[in-house]
Amino acid sequence: DAGVTQSPTHLIKTRGQQVTLRCSPKSGHDTVSWYQQALGQGPQFIFQYYEEEERQRGNFPDRFSGHQFPNYSSELNVNALLLGDSALYLCASSSDRGKLFFGSGTQLSVL
Amino acid sequence: AQKVTQAQTEISVVEKEDVTLDCVYETRDTTYYLFWYKQPPSGELVFLIRRNSFDEQNEISGRYSWNFQKSTSSFNFTITASQVVDSAVYFCALSEAGAGNNRKLIWGLGTSLAVNP
Image (tube, rainbow over all chains, first blue to last red):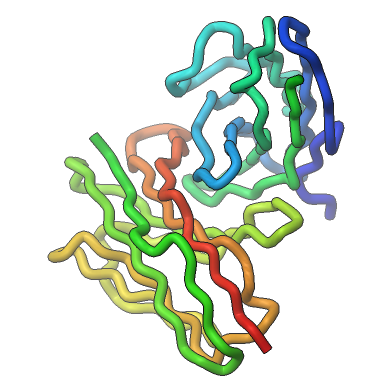
């Protein structure tokens, strides 16, 4: 049983560019959440998707957007990248209240 | 507002020592969940435990134990007879317990544990 998978593992972009990160949830999970983790910090909640809709959003600008597909996989899009967007982006899936399973993340570097 | 404080930034112990990681939380909710996650160098966050705010029983799982004290808003984590493989960053987190699939977690800054041989 595959866990949460994320792609790509690493990504290097320049300021102003756009990026798309992808996540496949654990089998049987219908809810996907995205977190941003800066170096030496705890994860910060970006948003959560359930039934292809954004259910809750953290304190992130509109440059951060997402999508969930009918197969429950999800994408995180970031437009107009800033240096401060450099971080580990973590995807988590769940089907039970509160018990999140995380992927290994996508390390995004913005130069 | 909800907040999680992990006052210990880094801890270094020698193998076989016991170590306790502290977690203090703030919330106005009467119903909530508390979590501990482990993040090894690979980056993946590994779920360790979830505790409902109504369940104050301590829990033991192998070498791991958790002490939940609602009176002091603390949820401390103890590793007994630590091993080198326990070296990781450990995060304490808090979530609301509202209706639906609300799983937004508020995280502490983490405690980096180094277990030396």
